[in-house]
Image 1 (cartoon, rainbow, N blue to C red):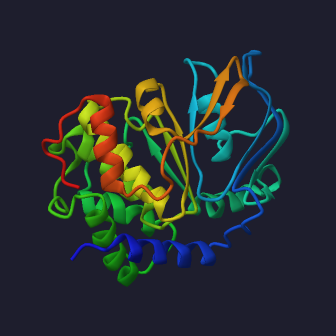
Image 2 (cartoon, one colour):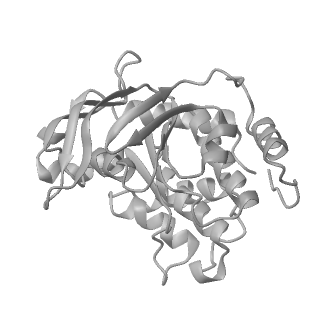
Image 3 (cartoon, rainbow, N blue to C red):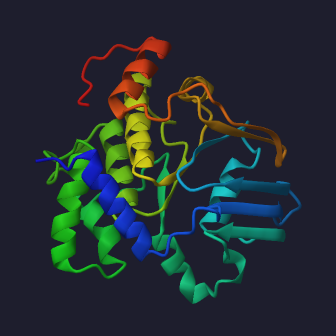
Length: 277
């Protein structure tokens, strides 16, 4: 039987406590006057300051080269700022020793446009791998992986390989892998970039479901229509600077995942065929 949203939410709260989740008054993400200049002189971010609270759903938007991916990479600590400070759950991650960075990343789920699945591993093994590398027990893996695959609608695809899946299914595996440990923060870099409108809605519905468990979600995207219809907070970047930070109040905060999908399909003129949720 699939886990209910109540069960998923309870598990997420327990996982967040175990991960040392921030107090409600501490932002999950905070950038303080952050500038990133790459070798060669190109500017990724230019004196950017922002705060994102626990449980928020935020879009980063803007043209290619505006700074979206730089921001995501700074939050993963793939990059260090040239100046300024980057905080996750109140901690300056620039001061974390390199040997502690893997521990930081255990609490951050990341979803990429190109999925980054291991081609020679099954769906089950791809998701299990993300738990193996952080030392989860076999018993825990056997419990968590089927649960998360039910959540993302892939319970019948455990033994399939990535090249046997559609693009939307591959992205669902990527999301399952990112969320299987129930991190307090989920980063998604162009998660619908290679997908058709119907599949994109399904992926955003899944990410919204994860957000409803209490996880803070940041999505970098070019999909302006999707962003407009989602009606969540939008941070727009241009030339490495924030040019808009708009909190939309045009949605019901208690909107269920099914209501969300029905509304989104109606507003985007997409049929409901094949929707498993």
